[in-house]
Amino acid sequence: MIKPITQSKILNNHLKRVISDDAFAAKTIVVCSVLKDVFAYSVRYKTTMENKKIPEKRRPFVAAMDLASGIVTAIAQIAVGFSIANPKLQNALWNKMFKNAQFKHIGAAKKSFATILALIGSGVITERVLVPLMATPFAAFMERKFFKHIPPDTPHFSNYPFEQNSVFKKFKQTKTSVPQA
Amino acid sequence: MKIPSVTPVKFNQRMANSLEKFSEQGGEKIANYINAAGKFAIAPLMILYNPFTNESKENKKWAAVKQPVEAVVTIAAQIMSLNLLYKGIDKLAEKGKLNFKLVQDAIKGGEIPKPILDAVSGDRTKAIKNLQKTCLDIFKDRAGTVLTIALFVPVLAISNRVFPIIADLLTKDNDD
Image 1: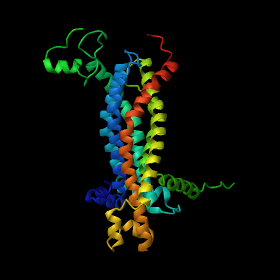
Image 2 (image 1 turned 180 degrees about the vertical axis):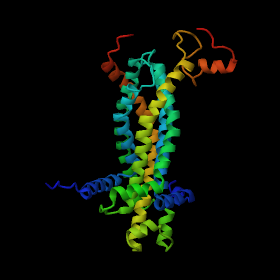
Image 3 (image 1 turned 30 degrees about the vertical axis):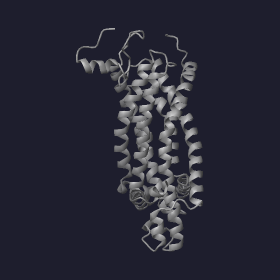
Image 4 (image 1 turned 90 degrees about the vertical axis):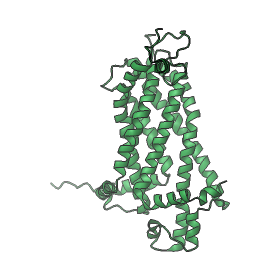
């Protein structure tokens, strides 16, 4: 099963490019990291809204936060990560920081330097500082707009978007006003 | 009086050494470490002290506590399972079951990527050995990403169980 993979053109071209191009290597790790985030936020959103252990009145905001963060994070991280991986910026920074330093494997060190900086830029500064700044008000907006506070015993309607029977979906289907609870 | 000058070379060298040590971990693990550190230390502060939102303080506390709990559960699960995966891949490679076309071509006299060849100043035997190791490391990283993604389902389920307990303890929710 593994032989077709190790012999495949796609994997071998990928290996070649990662070895020869530091910026590409850093960008690949950034994309992998963003893919993980997108997946994680979707799962997180789903588990939060099904999590009965979070008090009913806290849940909409926690869930809205997950959803909003996922959307904003993917776009912002790719933009920042790719800019930091840019070879011109990398060379300038490298020369400034490690001009006189000794390396055992300078090639490997340069590659991880690009990767680490791109990851800190996208995964720490963008994802943790910029995204929450943007996502928190976005989440509050989504909570107001789509996560209606309906008494839990109301039949057929759920409090969350993208869930079956959600107010949001029902609203879209009927194109009339949201049913009164 | 002569002010002793700071020796930037020494500082640079220390940074350089840490960079080399850290880079041995491989991209996937590095990505996970950086992610967990950011989530643990910065994410909760950003939720709590975001000036652009009027969300209630208790709501924010709940969302904030979720971050470090998730970071700890995630990094522990990731590193444990990545170590297992990497060991498995190493075993496969030892048995000779991971033969990358790029390496096979190089053994037959084909092209070796320039950075690898340059690092050993043109010694082909050494270069082929390094190429095999580098290819294996990149392969581990990509397989690791797939594993990390698959792990999110159980990991988030666990952290969703744990975090309301901790959040309840910390926030003393009085306004229910």
